[in-house]
Length: 232
Image (tube, rainbow, N blue to C red; front, side, top):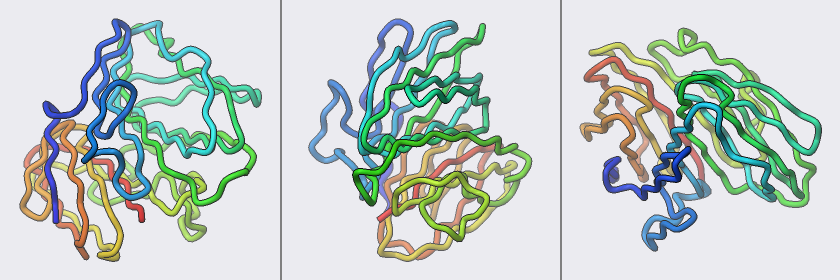
C-alpha cells in the first residue's frame, strides 16, 4: 500500500525567517490521520532565511535527524558540541534525558533541511550529537544508509531507534530497488526531482507513506535525490 501526500496538502506555516511544511501533525498543524507513521513522528521540510535560525530550545526522549538539502546549518548544544553541516550531509541528535540546542543558518543564502524525528527504542539514555559528511556521489544509483539503530550499518550515524534513514541520487531514467520486510513501514520524500515508486509518482517535497510492501522499485523521471525512513 502506498499513499501519496502531495506537498500542497501538507501542513504549512510561515514565520518570516522560516517557511515550513509538516508531513505529520506538528505545532499548530493537527491531522488526526497523520500524527505519525510507525515510529516516525515528525518530518518537517524547512526553508530558513539567511542569518537566522532556531534559537536555543530543549528536547528530550526523541531521535532527531537533520538532512541538509541546500546551504548549511550550524549546531550548538548544552553538551558543548558545535558543528556546521552542509548540503547532502547529516547530523543526528539523541535527545535522551534532555538537551538544549540551537540550529542557525549563518550563511548568506537560504538553507533547506529535512528535520526528521523518530521515537527512540529506549528512554533514560544520555543525550548525544554527531554529524558526518555523505558526498552525494557516493550514493549515485544506489541507496546509502545515513543513520541507523542497527549495528550492522557500520558506516551510518548511530541512533537509538528501530529505524534507518536512507538516501539515493538517481539520474534521469535510472531505476533501483529497495528490499524490506513487509511488516515494516517506509516514508519516502524526493528532496528534488520526480520518481515513480511501484508505479506511484512523487515530485519534489511530496511524501509517500508505504506499508505492506516487500520491495520498492524506484524509477527516476528526472535527475532526483530521495530520502526515506524505514521503521517499525
